[in-house]
Image (cartoon, rainbow, N blue to C red; front, top):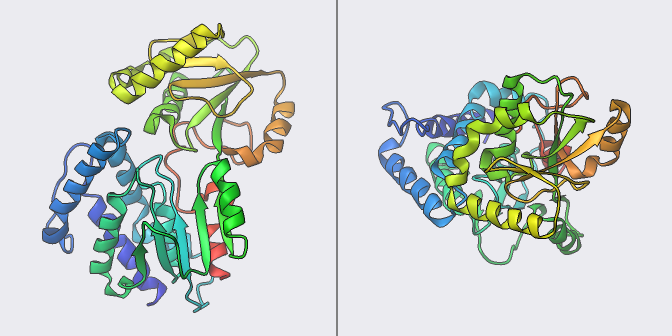
Length: 352
């Protein structure tokens, strides 16, 4: 199967996904195999919500919307044009997926297939409904994918390389278990934002998207703020207020109440507005419903600090602070060529 065939197949998958928006699920006449798959995928979205309380309809559709914009012929061509796909070697690549946000392992999945390899997927039990159904759709629009996609709940067998995502603790297990295989092993990372104090209301509102989307469960969610000394929090709290309905979500509210009680009992200083707590802390990883912050004196020192901590940081959200910064509001809108942990997945796969 040629690269162009794979691009066309994924573009058809993107068109199928585009029918499921937050406004409505609208069945379109020009989508292949819609009679067979449209209602079925509606049901899988419902099942994903029922099975995992963190997977709200809004968050599932937000993820699908992002993928529908990425899986177009133009975007896929732009992504793949940076590589040489002439290597005809076909390997079997195992993917161990996380389950913190909807379709979190989808980029690895399409990377393996668009590179010409076969994939063995071991999903998290927290996110097991959406991807197998989309894989079936992919096999229907491009029959050459049949036999190249396998899902397993048991022990991984008969594979030549592995991409595994988990916590820093499980990463040590992965590194030992797969030490004789070519691998990409991903550990815990968090995202941070550097504020100057001169941000506009729009920028701070966009930052709230980076904080609250997916309840802050993703590695691309901002969990830590770096602030100039004497920072005035009023503008920050005012800008993020549009997210206040999040406290009506039971799982989020339970975490908010629990963490607030812990902080109060421990006599920690914090600021809170009824749905978010901010606490001064050196750590990068903050609990749900909490964002840590730290003051800085000069930008050069902070730049060096973050450079030294780069293995723990996924994204830096800022405006004019560093070369590879992310715009406010864009952490959960990565392009196909924005690789997790800055490890080029396609380059890795093409060397197998």
